Amino acid sequence: TVLDDNKKLCLVSGEIIAMSNTMTMMFEVEDLAVASPATVSRCGMVYMEPTSMGFEPLLDSYLQSLPELMAPFLIQFRETFMAIMPGMEGLPFFLRKSLKETVATVDTCLVMGLFNIMTALLKRYERNEGEEPLTPEDIEGAHQCAMPMWIFSFIWSVCATTTGPGRPKLDEFFRKKAEESGFAEHMPPAEKGDSSMYEYCFDQDELMWKEWMQTIPAYKPNPEQAFAEIIVPTADTVRYTFIIDKLLLSDKHVLCVGETGTGKTLNVMDKLSNHMPEQYVAVFMTFSARTSANQTQDFIDSKMDKRRKGVFGPPSGKKYAVLIDDLNMPLREKYFAQPPIELLRQWQDHKGWYERKPPCAFRTIQDMIIVGCMGPPGGGRNPVSNRLLRHFNFISFTDMSDASCVRIFDTILGATLQKKFSPEVAGLSGPISEATIAIYN
Image 1 (cartoon, one colour):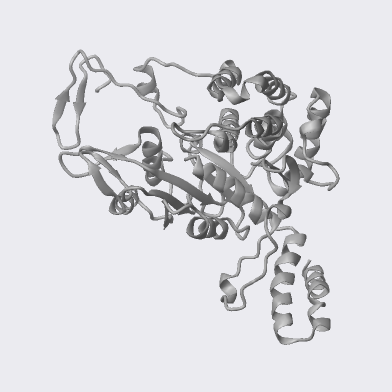
Image 2 (image 1 turned 60 degrees about the vertical axis):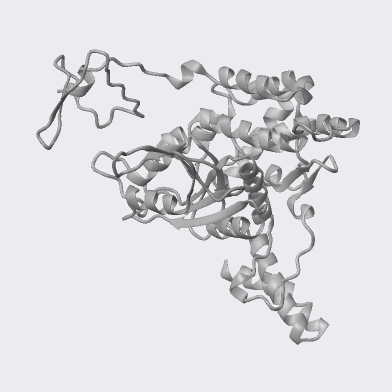
C-alpha cells in the first residue's frame, strides 16, 4: 500500500506510517525476477541497457584521469583498447561464446579491473608533495613501460577469468589481435607455446618481459620448518601473489576463484600474514551455509576502534586486509538474497552500515580491504550477486600444472635427501618426482 496513492506503510506490528508528499520510494535492483506485477505496475521504470552505453565513456573517463606522465600514450592506449574489446569480434564476446569462466562476469566489470591493475602498476611513479620528483631516467623508464604495462593489465583482468583449458585459446586469440592491430612488439615472447602470455611478467626495473620464476631468488626450504608449513614458490604462486600485492597496495578488493585444491586460501593467507607492509593487519573469517549478516557485522565491528563520532576503523596507522574464505557459501533466501553478502555490498557501496541497536546510527568503516576466496557455483556454493562482484578484481586459480607439482616435490625431497644421503642419491630427487607424477596421472 505504500506504493498506492494513499502512501501508507503498514507494518507487521499493526502500526501505520503515512508518507508525506515530499517523500518517494526508489528501488535499485539487479533484475525483476522476484518482483510481482502489482509492484512493477506501481513504479516508473528506468532500464539501463549495458550495450547501449558501451565501453567508451569508461575508457575516456579513465584516460583523462591518468597522470601527465602517460599523456604521450593516451592515443595508443585507446587504439589498443578499441581493437581488442568492442563488438562481436571483441575479446569479451569470444570469452563468453567460446570459453568457460570460473565466475560469471559482466563486461564493464572486466574493464574496470583493467583500469585498476594499470593504476596499481603506475603507483611506483607517483610522487607526493615534498618528495623528490621523478628523474629523467625514471620518466624514460616509465615511457618504455607504458604499452607493456597496458598489455599486462589486459592479461590479468579481461583474460584472467577463464579456466585452465581456456587459457591457450585466449592466448592465441589475443596474439592474433595484437598482430592485426600492430601492438605485437609490446607482447610477451611467444616461445613457450601454450598459455605463454600468462608465463611472463614485465619487469619495470629491467624494462623487459621475464618468466615469473626469474623474478624471485632461488628457494631453499628451511630444514627446521614443519613439513605442513613449507610453501614452495611456483610460477602459479608467484604470479598470483604479485597481482594480489599490487591490487591491495592500491586499496582494490580482490576475488580469487578456483576449484578446491588450487591453493587460493593458502596463497592469500601466506601473502597477508608474511609478505605485506607493516601497516596491513590480516583478519581471517570463513563463511558457511549458516553464516548470518548479524554474525558478519558483529565480527567486523569487534575488530574496529572508534576514531570519532560515527567513524570506526583499525588501530591508528593500520589497515585491515580481511580474507573471507568460501565467500559464496551462505544460503540464499526465498527471494535469492544472501544477507552476509548484501551487508558486504552495502559497505563497499556506502562505506558503512547501520547499528542494530537504537538510535541505529550509521557507522562509517574506514581503511578496510576485502580479499575473497570461493569456488565456482555448485556443490553447496551459490551464485553471487553482480552488485557485489563489480567491486572486485577477479583472479582465476587454475589447476596446478605437472611442472609445478614436480617443482614442489623435487624441492622438498631434494632437501631431505641432501640432509640424510650422499650427493648421488640426492641427485635422484628430480627423476623420482617426475616418475611419481607420471604414475599418478
